[in-house]
Every structure is written in C-alpha cells, then in structure tokens.
Length: 405
Image 1: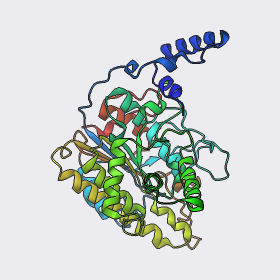
Image 2: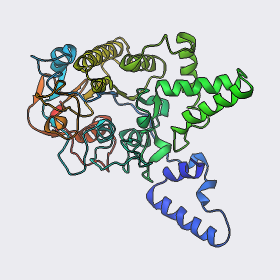
Image 3: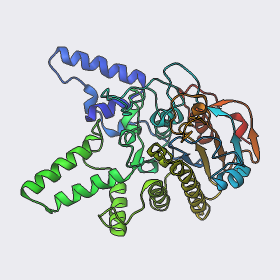
Image 4: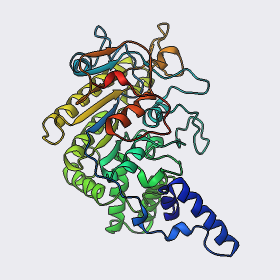
C-alpha cells in the first residue's frame, strides 16, 4: 500500500475532497496525482492520551452454542458460567440477526462484533469458501486510535495460524479511517514471517535453498494483500518476536499450539506490550468438523481455561486490575440436529447458529445482572464506544444500556 493511501485514509472528509480536487487539477496539468503525497506526518490531528479502561474482547470462537457454555446444567466452561457470570452482565439471548445474505460464520461474526454492522461479505479474490473480507465501515480499533493517541502495538488482535483469511481484519477500506488507524496482530504466522526475514538477512542459506526460502517468505507476505507490513510490524512487535524466539526457539515444537497459543500470546502481550484494547480470537471449537464431538467440548474447556488465565493475569497487574473490562462473545453459534452423529457439526444459518450470548464484566459494569430479552451482536461495537468514550458513527446497533452500572 502506498504512503498516499495511508495519508488519504487519515484525512477528514472536507480535506479529503479538497486533496482529490487538487489531485485532479494536477493530473490535468501533468503534475502528480495526489498533492496529499506531500503532506507531513504532523498533518494528523493531535489526539489526546487515552485514560479510560482497558478492554479485552474474547471471541469465544469457532462457533459455540449456548447449551455447552452458559447452561449451568450442560456447561463445559464452569469458570465462565459459574464465576464470571456473577461478576458482570450476561446477555443470555444475544443473536445474530436473521437477514437475507447475512451468514453465521467465523469471519463474518468477527466483523459484526468489531464494526457494529451486519453486512454481506465476499472474499476479495472471489475464492470459494474464502473469508478474506474487507469491511466498508471502520472497526472499533480504528475508532479508538483515531480518537486517542494510542500506538498500534497497544491495539491488538490475537489470531490463530489456521485463520489466514482473518489475519488482516485490522482495518476497513473506509476513506476516513483505514490503515493509519489500524490495529496490529499477534499470531504464529506473523512470527514465522519475522523469523524467515531474520534468517534470510543473516545469510543462513544460499543458492537454490535461498531461492526457496525467499519464495516461502513471499507467500507469507502475500497474506498481507494490502502490503501494509512489507518491512515488518514495527520495533515493538519485532522486539516482542525476538523475545519469543529466544524463549521458545525456532522449531515451533516447543511453544503451545491452537487456542493455548493464543492464550500465551495474550499473557505475554499484557506484560510486554501493555495493550489498551485487545481481541483474542479463539477458534478451536471448529475442529468438530473432523467428526468428533469431543473436539468441540474440549475446545470450550480450553477457552474457559484461557479466559481464567487472562483474568488472573489482569488481576495480578496493578495497572490493569480494577481498570479492565472484559467482553466474552462467540463469533457464531452452531447447528442443533439430534438426528446426526455430531449434532453441532456446522453453523450455517440454522436457528441455533444465530443464538449466541455475551458476558461483559469489569469496572462500571452491572454485576449479577442477567438480560433475558433479545439483543444483537452488532450492539457490542457501540457499547465499546460508550465504555471507552469514542464515537462509533457508522455502527448500527444501539448501546447495551443494561450492562452499564
């Protein structure tokens, strides 16, 4: 992505239109297309420091039903169901709206949460079952970073290596927001990219082997279709991966995998990067597609343990304790078909696939509250804006007022 795009993305609408007009005039006279290319970085409007609560969004993901999560008689997540639910507000009947062409799947659900808008998404390369989506409206990360002077290494998405299509949900293509206000990402794919760059630069290979490694690096970099990280993720993330490499080595056989990896990345990020807004995209429930229901129920238990560890880390940290709000919400539900061997195998627009929940707890959140009427998944974006004091002007759902004490 060019610097011109990055600078255009940060301009207010009036300035944006002015620069387009200048660019059109320049084109007519043979000059450069965008006069905005010459704008200094100081042209960004000064933003105040953020002094509100930290927020941890946990995508209880891979498709999780209410039955195995918030039902006290059936739950595989006892910490969430029996302890955390008492500490905040539980929305028992949150749903993904039943609207034509609105899907109940992982990428879509993630974007519904962070944009506050239902939309019909298509893979940018029109791949069958592809989930490389680009939102047309800003994410909560963009709203947050445009409102406050927060660096991108403190606005993080923690992703699974199995979700390459989701690696760059960091920013929308909205002209008032976009790449300049993006979040950053922690994932094993990002570590592999960092590691391969380092190994090539150190001259570890030559000849045919070097060409193959350069080809491998190009494939990893191609995941970033919009070319925002050609030179890496910045010094803070580079140093993070350096410490990770020193601790776990290079083989990938020592560090945790699956959702346990996401938990470990999040715990280290809290200690080393000090994020103000972070989203953890758990997803191991989806391994139920391999045909064993235990993959699903065990994944719920693993997520529950991950949540317990993250909460414990926050509560042991003086700067995060009593200043951190948690939001726990599935990306989508799952089918409920008692006539099949694995009744929760899919999540394709059946009624139970639309039926999810949300739990919000932390300072300023009503405790021991249960909301038993229908609410929408897209309401979470406006609620985060309210809690963190930024406007979500393009989101469509109202604030979940019942959660605010």
